[in-house]
Amino acid sequence: MALVTLRQALDQARSGGYAVGAFNVSDVLQAEAVLDAAAEAESPVILASLAGVTAHASDERFWAGLHRLIDGYPQLPIVLHLDHGPTYETCVRAMDNGFSSVMIDGSLNHDGRPATFDENVAVTAKVAAVAHPRGISVEGELGTIGGSKTDGSRAAIVLADPDQAREFVAATAVDALAVAIGTSHGAYKFDSPPDGSVLHMALIEKIAAQVPETHLVMHGSSSLPAELREQNNRHGAGLPESWGVPDAEKVRSIAMGVRKINQGMDSHLAFSGAVRESLGTDGLNVDPAPYLRAGREAMQRMVAARMRLFGSAGQAGYIGGSQS
Ligand code: 13P
View 1 (cartoon, helix red, strand yellow):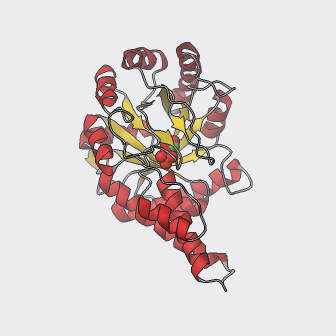
View 2 (cartoon, rainbow, N blue to C red):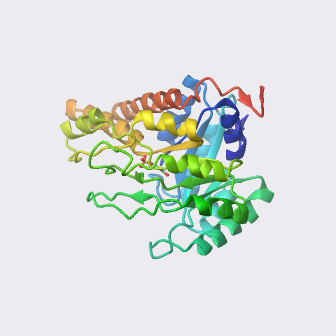
């Protein structure tokens, strides 16, 4: 089975009433953690890579390593997905490197300001016109999902407009749609436990009603568990208090029609916390193997727990409506 498209994985998720996690990875060790979690949980999985964000010497070297790794999990349905492709050219580069799904993030212009609706439609449709004949799925973005920087400041959020969803999907033919509902990427999200004034869950239902054939995606879905922040801070980090998306809201989003849930930061917190603890408690060790193993294992535990939360655990054998 191994590589499947986002459309195949999410069509199956809709039939089964669950969501598939998209887990950001920036090196092969993290990808191993995610795929081992999927094997442990018997879950379909989306491996998400951002272009230009890897610990390896180049994207191409990293992505070749991902393919070799994926070959070792023939029992799993795995989507290899480009996260937030900033340009048409980047999306084509990912397609040429064997991705089965690309996200074109047409929500922002080159100068980082929100693009107009028409600009977003134009670049998204251009990517889909190339991807679909090659059997590759496409995710677009409606509205602008926020992002937090390491200094704790945040980029502006532009909420998705349900009235534009139908037109966007008709004009672009995207398979999946990231909807800005108030979440943001990164380690600094909400200043207090989020309520309806900042996390606009009702938007999901409204948009789902407009585009029933398109799979909705929740970005910026990390929960930012306090115990992981504290573990990191006990061993040298200085992460300020912040709240993410509560587990219960993620479960609620699935009932409302979300089929893909993106997580990067919770995995990073788990990995880094374990690495920091390992280094911090064994001052004589300089061998990377023990601390990297601790990081990989902590990330695997985190990702497997998310797969159980999203309801995708136990679903790996089902694709295309029958058990393989
Ligand atoms: P977090 O930053 O909340 O982990 O979200 C990741 C994401 O949405 C990647 O596209």
